[in-house]
Length: 95
Image (cartoon, rainbow, N blue to C red; front, side, top):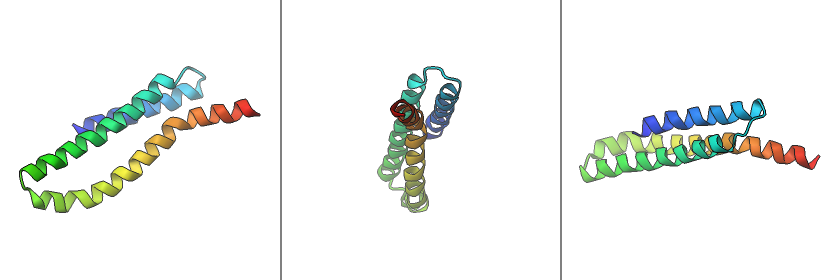
């Protein structure tokens, strides 16, 4: 499930940037991109919780250290990409 949410988050972020580039209203796509990023993180946490309940320590040892770093990096990238049109718009309105 987290993989599906992640793909939807990437698509929504792409739509967000595309809509900004052509001058259309991008805020709904921005909200969707950030929302699906949050759902991706929640689904991944749920998957890890299932592994703990099943006492699948090998899965935790193999996946969690790498996935934790990857999720931090990808979440930061998602936030920056999704709010960049708003920051660019704010910057251009100040000039």
